[in-house]
Length: 120
Image (cartoon, rainbow, N blue to C red; front, side, top):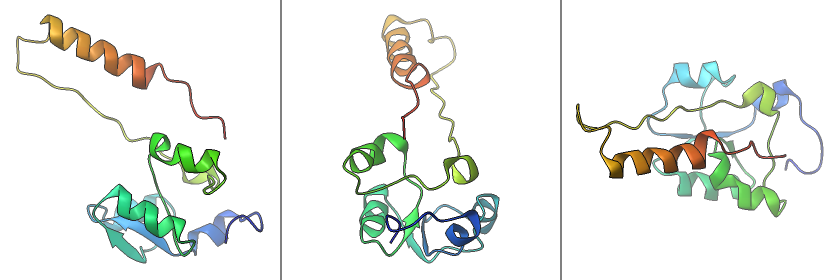
C-alpha cells in the first residue's frame, strides 16, 4: 500500500493504525491519530499486522530495521510521526557503584545512547 506513492501527513493520519493495548486516546492524538483500528498486546503481533499491508503502526527502530533493510517496511514521515521512548535503569539505593551494575550501565550506554541513528 505504501510503496506505490508518497503519502502526506493527512493521508497517513487517516490510515488504519494498529496500536498497543496500553496506549490511550491522548497518546494517539499526540501522534496525529484520532483512533486505532486494531489493538495488540505485543510488538510481534503489531509487526504481523503491519506486514499484512492493511495497517500502519509504530515499531521500535531496532526491531523494524531488518524489514526496512529488505524494503518490506518503510518509515513514514519520521519528522512528523516519529517519537522517542526514554528508558531508565534503576537499582536499590546504595548499590549503584557495584562492579556488575557499573558494567551493565556501560553496556546500556554503549548500545543505546551512543548508537548512531538509523539511516533511512
